[in-house]
Structure formats: C-alpha cells, structure tokens
Image 1 (cartoon, helix red, strand yellow):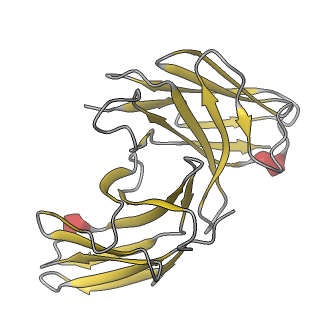
Image 2: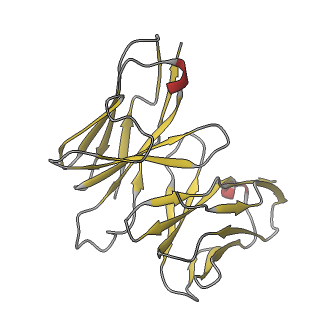
Length: 119
Length: 111
C-alpha cells in the first residue's frame, strides 16, 4: 500500500516551453502533497506544500509564478514549470501524506521522481 | 532551513560486514526523525519514523537509534547484503510539518 506515482519520469524540453509533472497517490487519499527539488550532490529541498482545494504554500525563494502547483483532488497534484530555462533542469520529486487520523499520518510516501532537462 | 548532516557521504563494505552511519540535526523544534532507503530509479522507501529520545527501532537486519537531546541518529545494518546497496536518507520533521533532508549516505555492498 501507499504507492505514489509520478509522470513523466524523464522529460527533455526546449527553453521557453512549459512542462507539467503529475503526482498521484494510487491507493490512498492525500490532503497534503509536497514537491521537492534536488540539485546534484545536494539534499532534497522542499519547494512547496500542496493542499487539496487550496493554494500551495511555497518555501522562501521559490517563485510561485514559475512553479505552478495544482492539487485538484485527494489523489492528484501537478507541478508546472512555466517558461522553462536551463537553470530549471533538475530532479523533481513529490511525496504525499495520508489523511489525518491514519496511523501513518506523519509519514510521507514518495514518487520515483522526474528528471527535467531544459535545452 | 534546517541543517541536517549525514556521514559518511559514501561507503563500500564487503558482504557480511556490519556497518553504521550517522545523521545529525538541530535538536530545537524537533518533532520526528525519518529514515528512508532510496534505490536508483525507485521511490524513497520509508524505514523508520522516530520521535522519542532513546527510541530504538528495528526492521530485519536494519536498526536505528535516536538521541534528541544531542541531535543525532544512527542507522545500523547487520550482515550487509548486496541488496542493501542504496542511498540512505535521514530527514528531520519540524513542528511546522516540513521535512528537512540530509544529503544521504550512499552504501555499496560488494559481493
């Protein structure tokens, strides 16, 4: 149980285009999903916290107009990198937390990540 | 941003050897400490969630201890096997429910 999928796993795009990454909880409902970014040889850095039905909360230094997050249902959150540039090339990974009251509430279940390369 | 550090960054051990690595984190505003196992091209897999000072958890050959007063956790692997090869991540959960990750320890078990 507690499987999170992420699509696509790898994407290459041209500079100036937008890329959408999907994060789905396959066998559980998640009111909260998280988006992380990992630079080479660095730790996972939280970008934003996505709550179903409300606006995402962005970490300091993360441009909300650049990284659009939508959490339209209890099983799906999307991250859209708008007008992507080479510096946006990175590894993006999402996680989902089960509903409050569940025994695993404090755990985050991760997707496998998306490798974005912007040419 | 919380400074969570892991050491060593990488290590190679022979099959059958036991090994351990360290995660250090700020002890203020501590809520929980998470350990994850991350194999290449797969999702990080939760190993342990630890909250209490002195906690010790075990899953098969893997165990972990927690010292919240001094801000460190150890992960132990007994009798390492090649399938244990992975990156082991720790993350500190603050009261704001944000996870701050270390950079991980990459373990390679040589058959």
